[in-house]
Amino acid sequence: MTLLASSATEHRGLIMSLFGLFVAATLGITVWAGRQTKGAADFYAGGRAFTGFQNGLAISGDYMSAASFLGIAGAIALSGYDGFLYSIGFLVAWLVALLLIAEPLRNSGRFTMADVLAFRMRQRPVRTAAGVSTIVVSIFYLLAQMVGAGSLVALLLGAHGDAAKRWTIVAVGALMIVYVVIGGMKGTTWVQIVKAVLLIAGAAVMTVLVLAKFHFNPSELLGAAAKASGKGEAFLEPGLKYGADGTSKLNFISLGLALVLGTAGLPHILVRFYTVPTAKAARKSVLWAIGIIGGFYLMTLALGFGAAALVGRSGMVAAEGPKPSGNTAAPLLAEQLGGGSGTTGGAILLAVISAVAFATILAVVAGLTLASSASFAHDLYANVIRRGRASEKEEVLSAKWAAVAIGAVAIVLSLFAGKLNTAGLVALAFAVAASANLPTLLYSLFWKRFNTVGAVSSVYAGLITSVVLVIFSPIGSGLDNSLFPDVDFHWFPLENPGLISIPVGFLAGWIGTLLSKERPDPEKYAELEVRSLTGLGAH
Image (cartoon, rainbow, N blue to C red; front, side):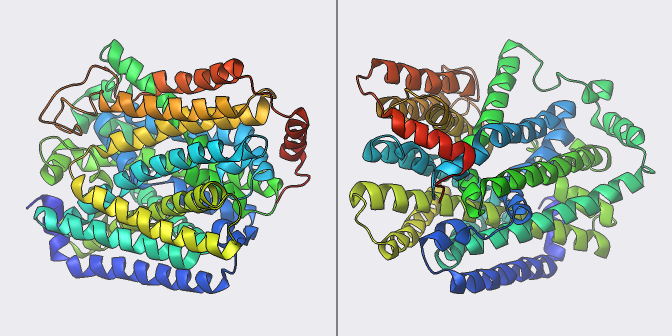
């Protein structure tokens, strides 16, 4: 049994109690929100009743996934400066969302990304393409979160074998279906707000405790981390992970492109802009999100370097095995800060941070399920299958059934994906969002000649290119943590396809538009332009 699992097993009752308390509280919120959900606007957009600050908190809760909390702290603890580059990519991405997407999207659409595209193009082809892209991105992201949940909870509870992971995946899947079907956007938003407050509070307490250990002197903390890492000053300088050779540098550029451009195309982030009453509130919510997320990522510096100094690589090896991913860095650090293994203080802080990590996963999977089920019901069912003749009640009912179906698919796929590279799945989700969704949105909002052929070409080219390149990359095969570790058929050298697939998405949209004989209605574009910039006629 690993060091962390051993400690967790001794205090399993405390950890389970905190897990249960959070689940009970969020289920109570969901039932309360469900009683207030009356129609499509309530189910999809929370009645557009949230303030900029509330939505900013919810966006933060939706965006700061387990990869942000556990993954970045671990990446910094293992790779030093290069590990923090993830944080920079995740944060800078919000400038793209703020300056180019948030306000025009809120003004132009109603419930989903496809509303913007369908405003001046042929409904059925663009809604089909946007719906497919949304569901693909959401399912890859869901897989990563649910596999991560299974591994984390099994590790924290000291459970052996795959059975514990499988039951955790089933439980997380069942909870996310309940959150969405009963609470809709109102319930999901309040779960995300609660989770964001818990995550910020937990990270803040740990940051203060880390700094207190080093007399509130950051230089002393960094020096201790560099010394404990065994890498010396190189731990605090660029190049430890991404500067070894040309391929690693290209990998970093590709990853950076996907992170910076992908955020503004993530479906579960885009739908959050519809939950506020005005474009001004949408812009304000992004500003709040930037402040909250930026503060959190600054705290990951203290957590990551604190874990490097106080836990060390040896501690993570003892907890995870000879090739640590770093996902246990934050829980191990919490235990150390509370007094160490075997102490009551260590057990309490470990239990609290573990419950926060679990809350993080639940909130993110609920947001993903809602975004994908809303896209299926509003885009595919109501406007493609029923050709706009579905009633509001039928549409909401189909969204609930879609949430059950997508949740079931995610559970089944996650059960078979227990050993997959979760970082690869998240990177793929960002790459698809940046390659398929973002080019189409930007062209639609800002290019007068853009048409249906261009939109469909952009979505499918970006989607297919990114998926194919990941399958034939080191993420797909050839490595111990590849999707198919026992065979090697990779020929694409980069782990993230963004460097190739993002330009392909933009290029396909441009070429498709120029080659098509279709000429969009200039009056429709003028109407969209006025609506997107001023809010006149917005829902």
